[in-house]
Image 1 (cartoon, helix red, strand yellow):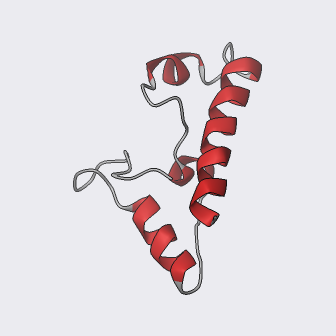
Image 2: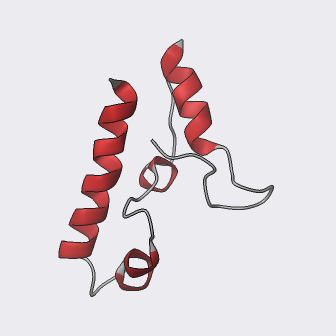
Length: 75
């Protein structure tokens, strides 16, 4: 349930950014996103959880490659 909620938040953030902020700061980034989501690691400066939530939080901030800002997983 938590992962589905995070998935919804990522999709909603993309839709709001595209609709409300496309001419300001998301114009270049939103148009290039193939998955039509903004990853949780870009939405928040810190993610945390306990037990299963900690596993989900850790998975969402693992970079695709070392030094990359692109996350390997999304909700």
